[in-house]
Amino acid sequence: FERRERSLQQMLEQARLGQEEETRTAEIQLAMKLKRQEELLRASEAKIKSLEESSDRQQELYERHVGQLSQQIRSIQENFRSQLEVAQSENDEQLQAAIAKLSDVERNSKSERERMRAEVEQEREEQASKLAQAEELGQQVATL
Image (cartoon, rainbow, N blue to C red; front, side, top):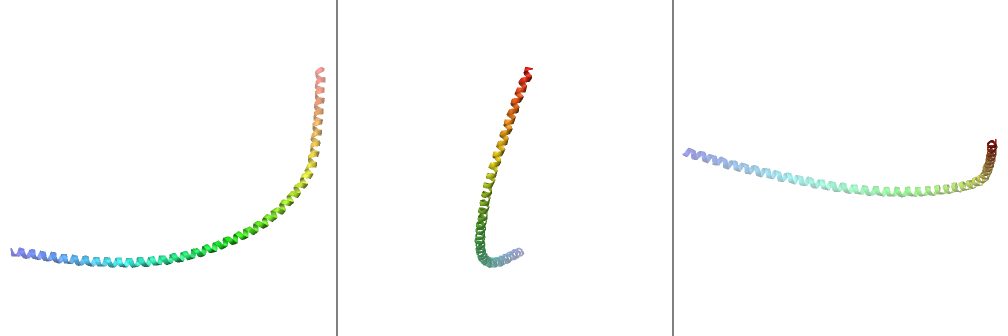
């Protein structure tokens, strides 16, 4: 019976020692986990700060770039307006020249149209005369 009691006491002692070991292990693991979380938090804060600084630099570059593009657009618009005015002036000159040439062409074509009308009228008269002669011949042939 004593042996058994000693054996049970040894088992209880071993269980108690095992429980203490597990508790120490859990405490160490918890401390390590807490330390790791603190390290991750510091790393996250450093990353956030870096991203904020990068964002500020990017914003500054963006604003500078927008300013440059706005200036380029204004310059391009001014150049375009100037070119448009020159082109408009050239087009006006060409239009005036074309109108003058059209007037000349109209005058020349009017006399040409009158001549062609006279020719067409003469051809009609000749065809009407030939048609009348053909009818007379047809009547003469019919009377034969």
